[in-house]
Structures are given as C-alpha cells and as structure tokens.
Length: 113
Length: 114
Image 1 (tube, rainbow over the protein chains, first blue to last red):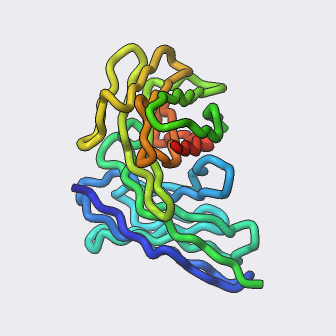
Image 2: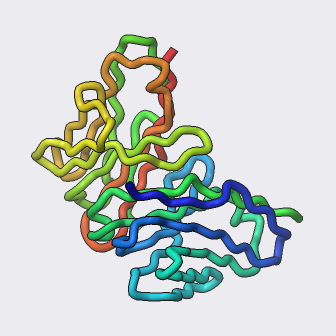
C-alpha cells in the first residue's frame, strides 16, 4: 500500500531556514500536500503541489518535488517562533480533495531562540 | 476559509458504552466527509469516506459495525463508536470536501475509554 515517510523532529534556530523532507511510495500520487498542526487546532493546509510541477513558492514557503525519487520537501524561510508546530506531508492518489489522504507521521518543528 | 467543527472536543466514556462524535461544515456544503484516526506520534489514518445520503466506505481493517458513520446532510456527519473499549481511545479527526483540491479539517475529538 501507499506509504509516506518523514523524520519526526527538526530543530532550527529562529531566523534560519527549515527544510522538512518527505518520501512517498505511490507513483500515482497526483497531489502532494503540506499541512500544519498546532495544539488544539485542526490541520491547516499550508501548500500543495501537483505532480507535474517540480517547484512551487508561496511567500516564505518553497515546495520542491522530485518525482523520480518520490521526494518532497518544504522549506520555510526565516523561521519564526510561530512556525513551531507539527508538519504533515500527505498525498492523494487521484482526485485531489475528493479522496482520502495518506499522511506521514508528522515532523515536529522546534524553534530555538 | 471554510470551517469544520467537531463536537465534543473531548469525551471520556466507560468501556462498553457508545459515543457519538459530530462533524459539521459550517459555511459550505460538503459532498464528501472523511474520518481519520490519529494515535500519539503517529500519522492520521483514514478510517472511512462518507457521501451524503449513501453508505460510508470503510478502509481495510476498520470494523464497520463498531464505527458507525451517518452522513445525514451536506453539513453533518456523525461517527458513533459502539461498545467502546480502551483500545478505541484515540484522536478522531474529520475532514470535509466540496470541490477542488483541498479537504478542510476539524479540530479533532479526543476519546478516552476507561
């Protein structure tokens, strides 16, 4: 079945860039997503990338997709304390939001002052 | 943006009892709603997909008689955990979809079975 892997923790200094990595196994993935989860709040969609793209930039966020290696990364520039959260990589096999998503375990981003 | 609510946010129940969790899309009509389960330090696992007015589709390994899903309207889906046991203790999250690429997630319900 599908599998999405990501490291559990990442610690960065405030002001530095954070790079969160994700690998997936399903070659039919159409949409790949990054969600942010803060305590007591629902998952918030940060950004997504369609499988025929290799990069997407949105303000401080840059998503890189290497479809050959099935590797996805999220770069957060100028990391702030408010970026402290759990970041989930997720993939959808076909229809975007119409299908259940397969999630990684989440990367806990820790910001050092 | 679209808002999805869940009620209750936390519930404690005794083993053997049933618990109902509600998921509502507040400002849009959801053609499809999803139920996920999240264990500590684990990913969200899709349990079932429900479409308004039809039976839910359950993922492999999810007991449909234990986790009853009712999608009665375009803004409400309910998950009932029947005859709950301590191993059912978990964080249950719903999401709702209308169109496009995005699912909107609720804040989750923490279920503790004693």
